[in-house]
Image (cartoon, rainbow, N blue to C red; front, side, top):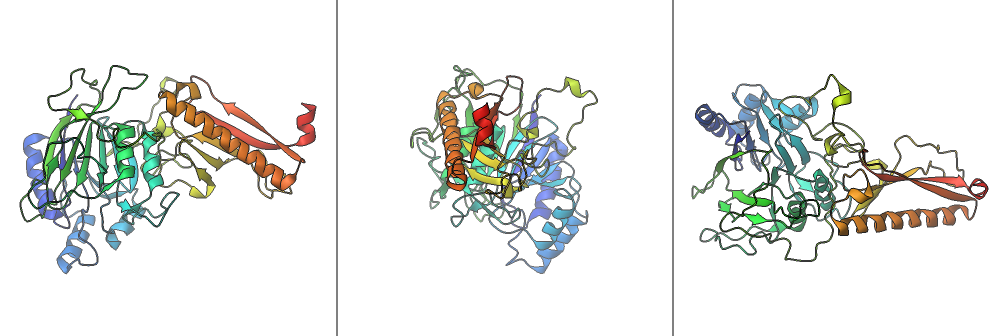
Length: 438
């Protein structure tokens, strides 16, 4: 069943009037949900006394919100009182208003999957996940982590993807330059193949022609279509479009016929596809909440009969990285297609191997959520994943030799079955004499 959604560009502190406008539109259209992109609040460094009063009124429930509404992280930090409330309330700022976080995957009660990457790329962090949830910066690994969502109905990003205008005939308004794009956002869009990709641009509205993605091995005839739109700030001086409403049915199949004017994906022609790990990082590998795939505004569905549940998807997978509260201290390395982590409940202890001084029970895990290596859909991704897992394994053996000479060897075993959840290898040091005994 199709759901009506309304998207609003950066409010930049003007949320009282915008929420009132959304309320009036909702009374006539019965939207399923509303999403505010970019900066919902004014920059705290330049906020006025009126801004501060509006924030407190919102938190205290004095501003009515008639439908489930989400807001994202933009280019500015969030106000202090907002952060304090979010830390205490599981990202519910007030009734019907929810924070989507810096990186998240959310599944609404209508079944709509929303993937969100907020903030700007932080060039000072060359590797790893960002640890501060409320600062308006993300890393390339934050974007990479979200690829494991595998798919999205709606992708939300603060910044444009690089090269999105390539192959397009749609021009920007006079005097408006193309916003700087981020390569990691382009790779994320290419990996998830969302039905809609929304971003922000302060001075202009932009709607690109639809573009199609290459078919996959599982669906050789399907060419998923993405519609990219960028909404202007709600306070822009030239009255560029800042509100967009549309209908979406998450259960509808991919159309066989391409809409008129559809172009090839602008991302597949810019360079050789590096791998697009379908990993996911807003699903929990190390914890189970904070924007892992979840139902909003309702809590996660509970089943009375667990035996009837389908195999857990990425949203419930303990080997996927996408959860913003992921325990990053357990992660040793994130590659292009796999990652290395210490086991949460190791079979060994820090005293088992005196020469190592830590348990050394490690997991080598594909980024793509797949029950077996053979079920990874893209052949090139499958081959690269296996090769990278082998490189990690060989590197761990070299590490053991450098620390323990020939006293320790290791056993590596694969956890993999067709009805499983997320395949991985487990690496455990073992005394050499035991290995020789078989």
